[in-house]
Amino acid sequence: MPLKVGIIGLRGIGNVHAQAHKADPLSNLVAVCDIVKERADAAAKKYGVRAYYNLTDMLRNEDLDIVDVATGGYENGSWHFEPTMEALEAGKHVLVEKPISNDINEARQMVAKAAEKQLYLGVNLNHYFTPTADRADEYIAKGQVGELVYCLHKVGFNGSEAAYQPNTNWRWWGFPYAHMKAFLTHPFSVMRHFCGDITHVQAFVERPSFRKKAGDAMLSINGINVKFANGGIGYLLSQRGDAPFGLGGWWSVEVSGTRGAFCIENCIEKVTFWEGPDPTRAANPGAMTMGMAAVTDVLDTGIKDFNATFALRIHAFLEDVTNGVPRDQLRASGRDGLAALEYTWAAMESYEQGGALVRPHPLPILHGTPGATPD
Ligand SMILES: NC(=O)c1ccc[n+]([C@@H]2O[C@H](COP(=O)([O-])OP(=O)(O)OC[C@H]3O[C@@H](n4cnc5c(N)ncnc54)[C@H](O)[C@@H]3O)[C@@H](O)[C@H]2O)c1
Image (cartoon, rainbow, N blue to C red):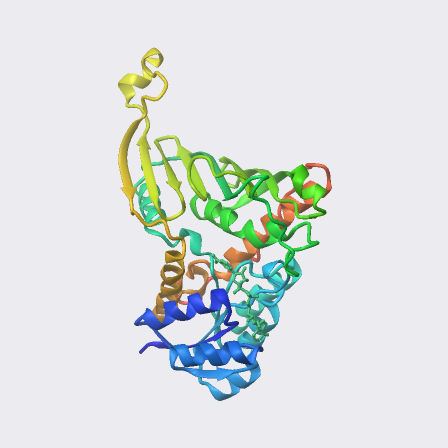
């Protein structure tokens, strides 16, 4: 039986979610809700569902399984806490857009509430619900990457000094951390997905002179060193349209281990795998000339449209809820969204301390689901 879904927040992203639900056999979109009546009415008409103008009414009148929270707010996250908490309190599973919140205390409370109510809380960490990430997961699972050596993540919006236009939207203007809070969730969640928990963070954060001249407070250039719990090291370079893309498109991540390396380019477009040199060449270092690493696999999906990730991620959430997976195995859970925000907070703290080394706040302990643990 498809799960009954109501979406809250029907502007750009809420409509992308609605289209994904309408096309998914695991979903039965029954209602949409926006405090702006025209937006709710337009979406209700478009998708053939009922319109609501506040969440309380939607929860009272609809027997929903899932509330999909696609609201935004300051730094794209200040309107996530209240609807998520209300829906969880009402006993509904929740999928919330990223960042889980623009406030770390709210984010911690959201994760705690889902645990207390024993409900699924998912976050739309859509960047690793892709054929390219699936292939990379296979390399790791088959032992082709080996022990992690490094992870390099480069993410940026294509831009330049000449193309710069101040974003004077009230959600962004005047918030120095808007880019970090709204956006670092994505690369941090990708890094953690492939490489595990991060234990140490050290950040250099800047903005180019043309932003300074325009009075734009946003700290748009972030260079962040990290250390993973497994001993691997990593670097995240993020910028918001201050420079052109360079190699790898919108974002690339290269993960290299003691046996092999993979690099995902442009999120969903391409992944390449390189095998480590064979033992005969390794025994003869002189033979290991530059550029001789063997490309052993390439997956070029031809997909350049990042919007394809939404339906894939939403389907995974619907699948997990339908299958009743143990809550601690929910893919891209609230706790995973919280982890990315804890790392973001650590990066901001590092910046405020002049580039000091910071240990991210520990994540809530996993208790596991009774009955789901092996004897
Ligand atoms: N995962 C991704 O790749 C990705 C990409 C872009 C944006 N996003 C996220 O999607 C979210 C939504 O983005 P957007 O640009 O569509 O936001 P938006 O602010 O343009 O639209 C949000 C809508 O929610 C409505 N709303 C707010 N609070 C409400 C409430 N309590 N009850 C009912 N309606 C309410 C507003 O009226 C508005 O129509 C943001 O959190 C953003 O970070 C995610």
